[in-house]
Image (cartoon, rainbow, N blue to C red):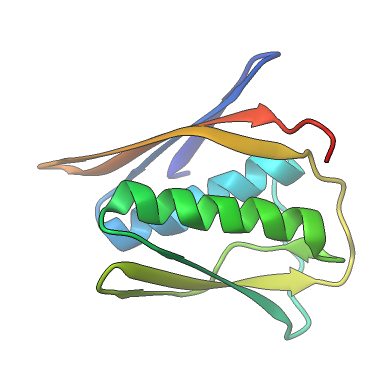
Length: 137
């Protein structure tokens, strides 16, 4: 598994490692959904519907933070269960993904991100994300 979740009463920490930028973003969104819906993620197929998300920014931390915010918003607003993206498109200062939507709604924790950090190393990319329970709103 390219991500690891650690939970405490106050926060959820998600650590992600991947050999490439694209795989890091893919694994991070999969980990965000696992943190929200619980693990393991539902393995059902979607019924053809997808929820588009996108982010814009001038660095990878801003882009990933934007995608995470969009994912958490979609979890709150969509009537079904979101599944990990099958593909992502990267452009200059923009990234887009489609999250498949399964009609059955799973219970989900309401989370908000509080910190995202990305590092690149010779052996690949790493990211550390931290979430707090979202207060009512």
